[in-house]
Length: 129
Image (tube, rainbow, N blue to C red; front, side, top):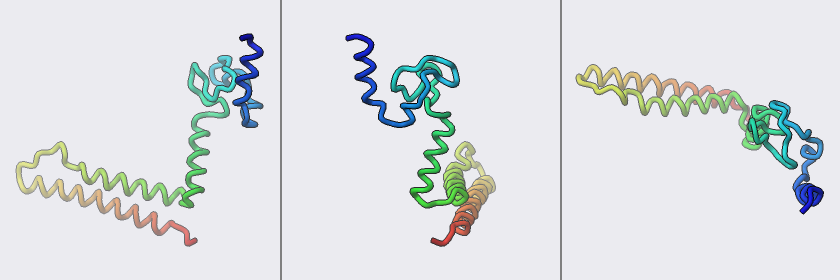
């Protein structure tokens, strides 16, 4: 099989307009890219933009599909993290007295109150549809 046949067979996978206008070298490290590559085989950079921009674009599309605003999502995620932290507070401490046990319970209550506050912020920030 000659080189032209390989290019012709591989070009059937280049259907996206992005791929047709893509350069043949990586913008980050300068390595020559293989035909149809989505990632640089040397540095791992996404060929059609930076990895951060690709992740940000995916996050925006996900938010648009779920119809949740970014501040609401941040508040809800923070509340979830606080709730999980409250479960593991005091896991490394072995309470020997009732006072130590009560301190651990107060820490748990503080984390749960933080989770409730963030959850309420998220609910209040939500726009009426």
